[in-house]
Image (cartoon, rainbow, N blue to C red; front, side, top):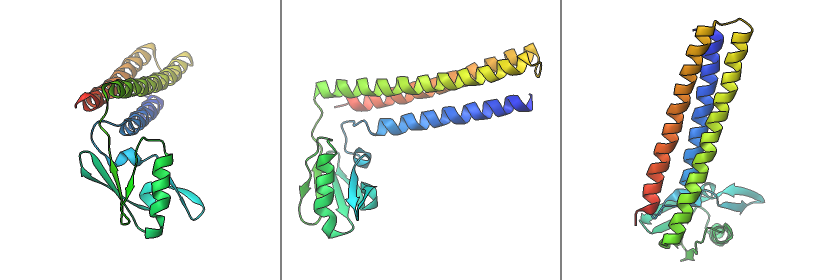
Length: 188
């Protein structure tokens, strides 16, 4: 295969992988029924005048399927972290026992589960659109190479078929992750 075509495929594959990775990261922010430290990934804490992620001022652990604990490294930060969690608007009400924060994760209502599934589907569609846009850009490059007579018509057709297969593979990976997340959310 033409060297330029290989670069196009490497670039497209790399960008599709990044889209998949970003989608997977977005899914971790969508809460399923079980407690997970990633539920607090969006929390930022005021620390010596800077906003820093919660995991830079303490440890977030799972005590059981419905409880998270936050152990801060500096006792003086306990109230600041508690305030940051409340203000993050996640629906959590941390309990400060003077030593650590304990967060009971309320069970999801059926309506809330449906909203979360809808949100997961929206994120999946964004990921699919991203992958299709990457395909579109790569397709333009391949067609430009063919137009400029840098590759033959047969090579272009073969490259476009390969590009479509790559796209289909990534769309399937997105759909598989969505299905898994949907099952997690709907499992009571």
